[in-house]
Image 1 (cartoon, rainbow, N blue to C red):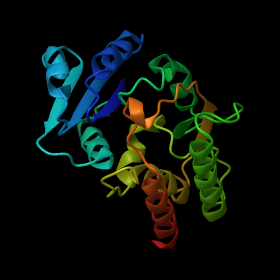
Image 2 (image 1 turned 120 degrees about the vertical axis):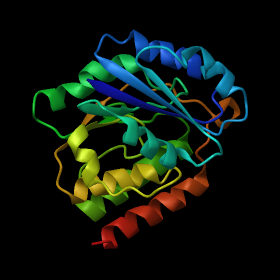
Image 3 (image 1 turned 90 degrees about the vertical axis):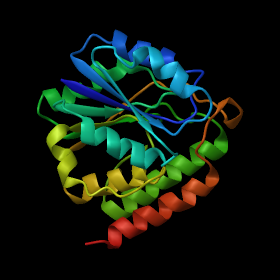
Image 4 (image 1 turned 90 degrees about the horizontal axis):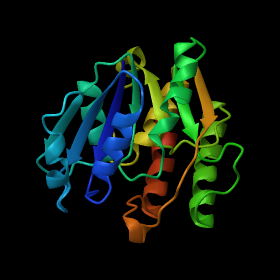
Length: 225
């Protein structure tokens, strides 16, 4: 079974459509929706799914951050494979069957869906350069060959997760997960994915400040024995 962990913060306009798209994917799956103290009507948008079979909705009483929501979702996951899915419709859940294939075939422990692999620039120039810079730093620190460490689509064999000592509360969860997967020697495969970028005026929440935190997290993970 596939566990789909969906952290949500103030995505009232898209979360219901995203859940329906995930439910439509023809795989044995469970959805774990973690509402991170949203204040925009997200809770009301989630109400129709509260008692739907195969969907678990958790409401955090306050905003804890994406990292905390991902960790909460992981704690509830029961599937053999776990994938993270943002609620903003930038990525297409129809990619799941292709992304989980290397794990099912036994050739990978972890799969990242890269927004830049074979596609060149995606999104604004600053967004593209920041993401490629973080990937380059990751490769230099950990001897990897990644193109996209901030991707939402990170797919794990379920038994990988207990080996990851995750503490991040915000967007630094992305470099923290990446660094720990690489340090522990898990087989990591990147596959290209489609991507429909949105801007901050459409609700995108990550900012340039999170880039500095990501750099600090990568360096700290490299130094941490």
